[in-house]
Image (cartoon, rainbow, N blue to C red; front, side, top):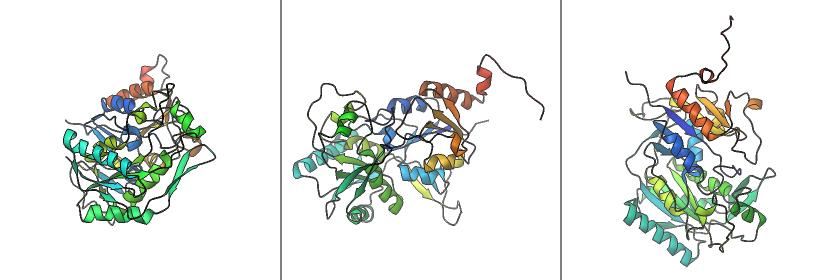
Length: 355
């Protein structure tokens, strides 16, 4: 008798300064390890993106944050694909030389990796991204011309038949800022991450297609004290390759209509099929986790992955298994998949009691 696929969701929220996953793709080793002990790993670009570095995880589903929220809520399902046709949006605010670097990176993924890209579109006006920091230290941002972004996406979807959208927006350069220096040295919060999420959320919410973002920035001067966790972003002129790789196999969204599953095909994945969710212990207030907490999925909260926010599961009434590290989480996932109670793996086991 075949058991259904064991499915894990790995979440590391964007822009909250996670000790693991708050830098340049530094949660990829966690994703690779979890991918070895589950049949399906559902995670998001913040976990899998590493600028010019990426890793092929055949059983991983690359799901943008807003899409992950809708999936967790049961509104959208996920449908695997062999390959997406990826459309590329470039911000009109990107300087000509920097734009050419990104176009060359896109062509390189076509020639070297065999990705299927459409012709690109330049927004009709500069997007004018502005960065913000919340009192907690978490990063966020705004777009001055969101309509221009949506018009460009509409052209790619309807005229170029794009099935996924990559966006490159010009972000403000601030090489001397304390926040950037702290990030480069492995401390503090990624100052760009929150604004990046705003861009991709807007397209996914409007068009229900996979989307991810890569910022365009002037290369920074060399720093001999650079943190290894931030180093992937210092390797070249663009962060685009990992985004195009992720989107090339990102699942399409299956949108429920009138509470009917008539549009669902065999093999589509729905939130009820998730067996476990792994999350930093202080970042449990997101929409996706609140939805998963209403389902039978085992929630595993990792204490070691500290963040800039303090939203623990217990005050929210969320039942979670607390572990210290991702190494401990891996052991718990192995036991959970095998149907073994974690209590049975401890030296002391109390007797069952009468109700």
